[in-house]
Length: 171
Image 1 (cartoon, one colour):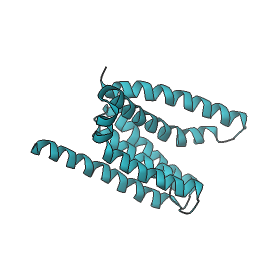
Image 2 (tube, rainbow, N blue to C red):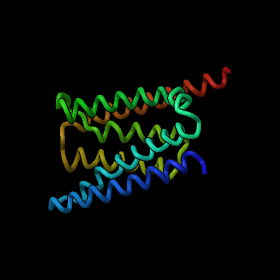
Image 3 (tube, helix red, strand yellow):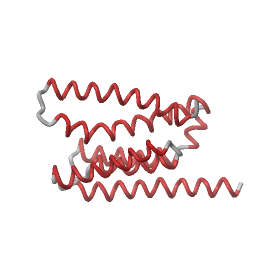
Image 4 (cartoon, rainbow, N blue to C red):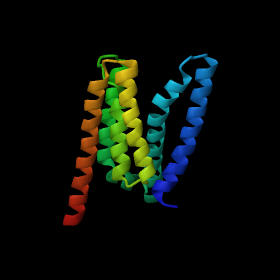
């Protein structure tokens, strides 16, 4: 089984369990917007878990140190994404959408890692749905800054990938 398929299987199973638990929790709390909450939150969690599963599969198959070297740039960009989430959710010092930060970045990452087209398309569609929900439905002020952050991180992912390919050709 290819690494991307293994990651889709493992990450997809984890995402399915997470989404089921999340839906159950929302239902128990009697949230009236269960469907909207699922449509908004499930895709980013699913894409993150599939991406994380890919990194784990890489670490198991190729060794931890080789995986860390191969994905140092990815981990750096993810660290920036986690800092944005921390500043948004914990310190509440920035008004930046975490969904719009992470969805473009994860979609670019999955594309660079050559995941199946359906997975990448799911990421792209999820990002568009999140933009619509954030801008038109929720009308939160964090939409534009989140989109700028997300597109910046996605661009970073693409640049690092191009640099890695260029370095591989030179060797």
